[in-house]
Image (tube, rainbow, N blue to C red):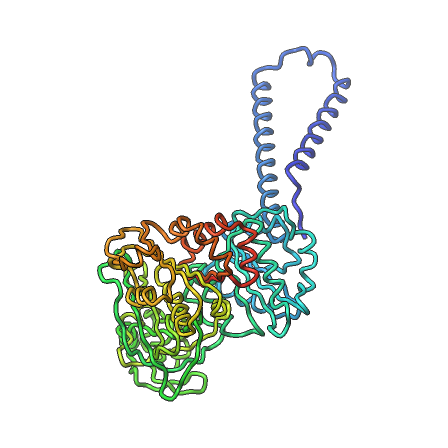
Length: 564
């Protein structure tokens, strides 16, 4: 391996050379007569001496600058070899016992690289405080072995780096915790790593994702969140999803005239003869499709018939159907391509995740989603398909996925629900479940923009307030409170209130009430936006209850979040 001297070593060598030359010159003085020494040199010799001196100084300066540049290059290479990422890099860290965490970390890094992002993959044994302190985004894939033990490669990291005095205020991170629910301390090391990072001041990109025995649904959940956090939501799924064909029975816009993007409610029914079961907190995975007009334009550019049958994984499909479920390739260069060649080039669209807003006993699966727009103003693939293109009475590819991390507490425990925007979907399902189970008292704190246009699912919520399912309702509207129309009886009985601002502000005003509910054993469920609302609510909870108590609620499962 080649080496480059440091700037200090380079300067020392130059000084030594200069001293040696001066000593040699002085040693030669006695060899000359006296005539030349006291005599002033003529002008030619003076000019020549000055020119030689200037040349020497320039050459020395260039040599020193090259040495410093080489030293900086070598220092950067040494830092890279040591695992210290550049500020813009994503650091992907694996803590593996049998190799599964390594494989998943490699897949994660590969997905980010495919999206054009710079990624550094590191084993946890090579991770130190300097590396973490210089990183901006870090993704940890952490296995748990035995009865809650860390994998062997993590031992040195735990001793040397997982200490209380390390501060990581600029780090954003996420943890994928691998485990086996058959063991008592499920995903224990992943949770310990997550708690330590939070205690060090790092900010979660999203909540820890648990994976039971390489569950593909949980891994898609991780992919979804990583893609969203990295601004690369089009990352392909690692494994195909086994969808069913659900029927789109109804669709309506909930907030016409809103300053925010349109919010739609969808109702879907399962295939005939199927009676799927799910719980409040579970997720609907949707297989989106492209805008039919975009599919037609691509096929026209390629001069291909969409009805042509092509092969994919040993099954014949109409070409247009396969294109509609895939990421669209650039039109340039498609002229003259064969149908099967185009099919072989296509990459499937990744699934989209939405909180389920209903329970099975209500007869339909309900979703709430906001139409998202690309920079050019066109709808995104997922929301565009569901809000605009999927035909009423047509089918939607859908799979229900269990999400135990956001299931509710036992019916006899009081429940506090906090959320904003389309996060009301997940909270509504919990209220429906409480109403069906005749559960203990519930309290909803919900925030949006305008009371008269953005009070989503108003009829359901006010109905639960009237029948006692909701013991307390606090609404927060950031751009106008007129039009909420809460029942005068609920206002008079101090069972409801409207606030100007955000849901975390409403929580602050109700601090004494919150402390009493938590003292009475209440659980807390938060659903909504990761940016703004979720960290704001968490900060208020810690200000009101104290961080130690909030951490205890997290550890016991009485504080759970589903944020995006």
